[in-house]
Image 1 (cartoon, rainbow, N blue to C red):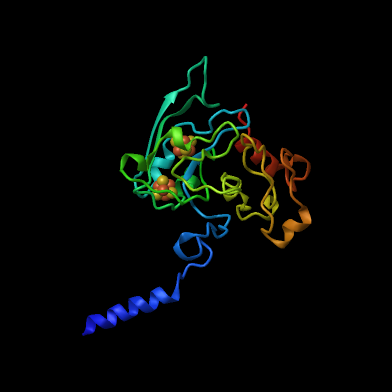
Image 2: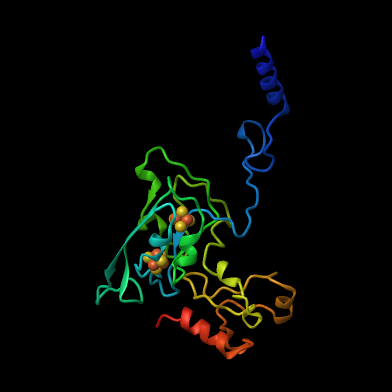
Length: 236
Ligand code: SF4
Ligand code: SF4
């Protein structure tokens, strides 16, 4: 008779309704709500572009080397002189991520020297075969508006493609108070140079944030910080 007790538990749980309240909430999935996501959530990746449309990836393979799941495959190639894809000598000719293996640890993002690879807030995507789980440059490279491509099998909602780039991780002041609130990341297609994130510390409120497109040179508390930006952000 023990199995009847098991059925009783099942029936009791059915009567209780769903446990998840704000994610496709409601019985039978009738409601289509999603819970707001934390800004630093690690979702599927994007390959970013500079403001002029050039690709940030230089095909260096550091992301592939650091990936603990070995799910990134990159092949670099020399930029065609008459049609360069990136500002460097080389660009990411092949770029693939296998989402059957990715654990969204973000180490690839941390390793990338150009903020080319970052993660979106999207994790609502699934596949019906293994090939579809391998995203290529066609899927990963942001569109002409600088936003992630909204692929048909992904469940994007308004605003979910906004905070996808390197500015979020780059906001940390690297342990030096002089760098707090100082832009240390490059501009992006469709967004320009993003302002520092609010709420890092009480000190940030005093220094204020930079407007989109503004460089830190006017407000930087140290000349070195401005030099840092030029070094990392410029791609002339
Ligand atoms: S998030 Fe982690 S597991 Fe996924 S591709 Fe990047 S380094 Fe690899
Ligand atoms: S995404 Fe970044 S780390 Fe990976 S190959 Fe491109 S430039 Fe190098």
